[in-house]
Amino acid sequence: MLDLKTADITQTRFYRDVFQLGAKEGKAEGRQEGEAQLIIRQVNRRCGVLSPNQEAQIRSLDLNQLESLGEALLDFTTIADLEAWLNGTHQEK
Image 1 (cartoon, rainbow, N blue to C red):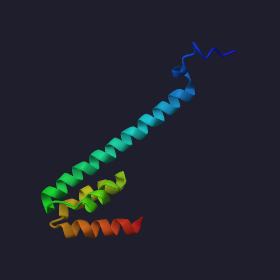
Image 2: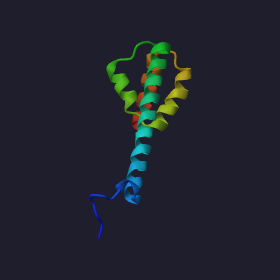
Image 3: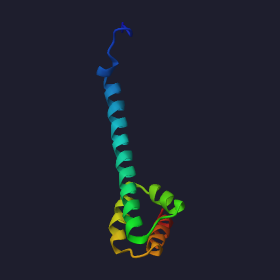
Image 4: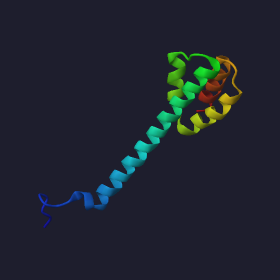
């Protein structure tokens, strides 16, 4: 019989699988947040200060969309370019 008082659950396969899954999800979230923050800073510098709504739209993008936006913003000259990109992206969802 299993003695739960002395058992080391960290050595079970279930615990390791759950812990590894959580770590992967945490890394992906952190990468997404970092990417969004970088893009927001770059757009602010290139096109002007974003509205809170525009920042929220950028933060809601998934990692693939953020990477696409990061490439597209190299061609942006105004906030209108960003708005057009965001409107086009959200229609594809």
